[in-house]
Length: 621
Image (cartoon, rainbow, N blue to C red):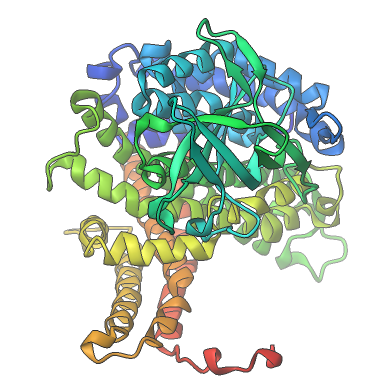
């Protein structure tokens, strides 16, 4: 048994009792996987995750990968390679693969539920297996030859990378200088340096296929001038066998704070010999194509963070149930009072309930977002990549998914990282700071989630300017309407009435922040007589808005869960489920009273924002 504690019961509660995925499974495109099969899938992946996958997490941190600069090769620890092989042999990667390439067709909601289990046990296993998900992108967008390469990626279990960041162009993707020159024979020569490339080199597959953003010679500047190229580590012959080494080499593997077994690489193209690639789909549409990968990666990062928080919380809870320390607070003056387990202490209970509420609420956030992807996925299976009709369920789901993705990534990573360090680890006292318990590694491994695929500040800017302003608030209004339905008063006796009131006030607060930022943005347009410096008022608050909106959505989802739990209790839930449902009601109530009221303070802070900060001399910092 490894370090990992799964929560399959809560995954099933979300999928089948709250989100109604039983109405989607077992029919249409998903006819081969009914509800019973889905439950079996989660049970089996949980078993694999808790044992074979989890067993190498700690060892692979203590014995990280070894990079040989002479051969540009990486050797991974044997323990991790054993875990990875267990995952490949179990063939759960088929959930990420198109049916045409031998995949098992499941809705995204089930796929992300399964991904949580792997990411919680050993996140690098999921990350090194990215080749299967990348094969889907290559198959759907690629030329006929590239579709054949996608099939070879699956059949041969090849790795894949997203090659985006450059040393001088981090979040400013449009400043990228990696160049592509047309060879005139359907291939391109790529030259440049990329940085922070996950899984850029390892010794677990014969080939690695790099998806590289580069600027064709003569193309315009900025993101619109970028194209996406497919550049394998080894050339692939027509019969699928490996040919000569391509001119793409890893020249450094970063020494990191955490998640050490996942190689983070500097990759150089075309320095030792030509790096030859092909244009994805034969179309110069790089940034849009890459965003297919980026959005999936952002969902993965949020899921990883939340999975780690869940594992940390469950370990903290179990420790609190066993650790005897001090007397009950009401007996503190009695030196002869019996010692109690620390779960009896009020502040420990506060800490555990906060961890529980966020872990389960953000799991609900991931799976609710995934249900929007279910609708989009069903549309695509019926209509291909043809965009849905405006106002149709698929069009709305697409917009809502886009709105929620920066929340999944931003809120998930920020709240998980902070809670793991300030609450989960703290539950163990001084012992939590030691390697005696895995939570200290969880904290280190989770920090990267706030940085991966765009920092929280980037997510906040995206959330406000793209997902709200550019969308003209359409998805936001739809979601606000759903929240308002839950917050509305009920006729008769409603034990959740106080929680509904707090949700309604929190919704008003978030809408107030949006209104303030919208007003500042409107007043920044010089064409309307505005002052561009008003954008600074927006920029100081976009992260605040992102996290406040995320806290609101989590509170809404927890309250929905509490309603379902109350109905189950009233219907006579089984003895083993009574505590589970009671915990759902308790978490929603605690969150509504301890987290949602803070959003009114966030509104007040936003409304007090001025540009004095922007006028502080640099030397004063």
